Length: 283
Image (tube, rainbow, N blue to C red):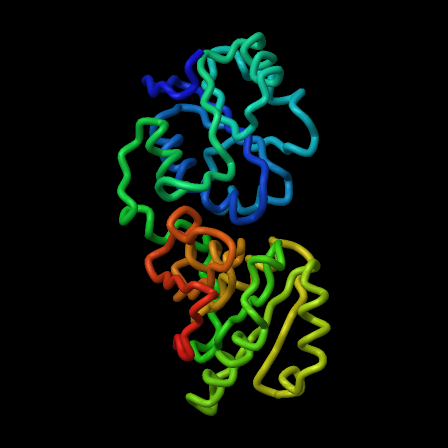
């Protein structure tokens, strides 16, 4: 079986997707292509991401990756299988269960085109890099937004190697507060960002009445807060940056250890910076 050949896709597709928040978000445009090409789209993904897929589409049949494959493998017969696991024994199991064709994708490419475009191209889709920079997620309810003078800063990520120095984020916060008296700054942190929280606590910034912060315990609570935001968003190459971009927010993303040509957030209002040449002013 040549997994790199692109042939006409069939009526049913099963996609296995593990990875971090950003990985899931960069897969959403692929789901839009699959919905066009297939009558049935099945996605096996960790349960914590299910709310996000439901925000994107009500057509996709969801399975919890953390609960194993027993429920979804029953649908294997005649299906096209898409996965990021290059495990011959696992692939053979699904072939024995009846899948008709298998596509295996590299989860961490080091060169080539943008990650999302490369997957769509492999599937025989036709999409330009420009076409991918649009709003992908729109709140289903009419959610009241915050005032436009808010700046949202998310100084962490899933890896400290990706993080811009906290001092740079604090500098952007000071500039934003100095622009107008009504401007405010909101800092968000994840549960893995305890070291950043410790550093913030040692500064005077969190004592300001114009600065708020929150440590989010779940991705869903983060999403529910972010969809109410209308101002700019600043962060590293991390899932929250991808989410802000896909919601159409003015998104400023710093890349330190990863390649923006492959991993840039997808959205209509994204600006990319390299952490080794941080501009003094970005807003």
